[in-house]
Image (cartoon, rainbow, N blue to C red; front, side):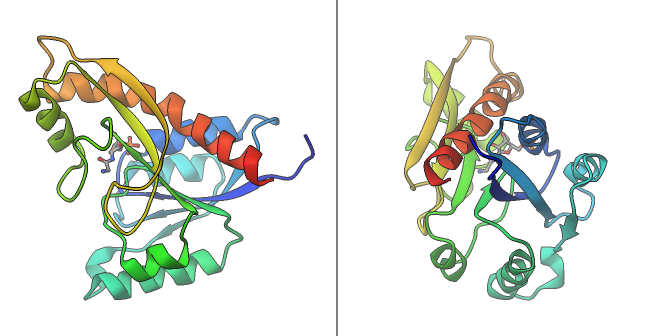
Length: 199
Ligand code: GAR
C-alpha cells in the first residue's frame, strides 16, 4: 500500500475510549487512516486530553453556546471545512446531527452504537439506557454496531457488528464494559475497511 491515508475527524462528548482505540490504530504505520481533528461539544471531555497527548488538534464547540441545533451544526461544518476531512467518526458523540449536516456529509459519517442494531437504537438510546433496554428485553446477546449515519437516527447501513453474550447477573454497567471492549476492536476494523475501499 502507498502512503496515502484517509483523513478523519473524530467527534466526542466524553471519555473518548473509542477515540483512544482509533488513535492507537492510526499510530501504526500500516493503518490507512489518520486523525486530523478531534471535536468535542463538552469542554471537559476527557477525550480532549487523549487527543492532546497524541498531538492531535482539538476544538471545543460547546452546544450550550448555540441557540439551535442548526447553528451548532453550522459551527461544526465551519470547523470541519478548515481541516482536510474524508470521514467523520462519531465516537460517543451525544448529539443528534441535523438533516442539513447529514446531507452535506452523506455516506461519510460513521458511528459506533453499543447494541446490535436495528435493535435498541433511535432517539434516547445512548450509553447506559441502551444496556438497560437490552437487559429489560431479556436478550441473550448484545454487542456493537459500527454503522453509517443517515437522517434517521441509528438506521444507516451497518458496516460491522461484534456480539457479546449477556450474562444472567449482568447490570447495565457490566454489560457496557464488555461491549466497550468489542467497540475498541470493531471501530478501527471498520475504519480500515472503509479506507481500503476508498483509497
Ligand atoms: C460508547 O459505548 C458508544 O457506543 C456510546 O457511548 C460510549 C462512548 O464511550 N455511544 C452511544 O451510546 C451513542 N448512541 P467512549 O467516550 O469511551 O468512547
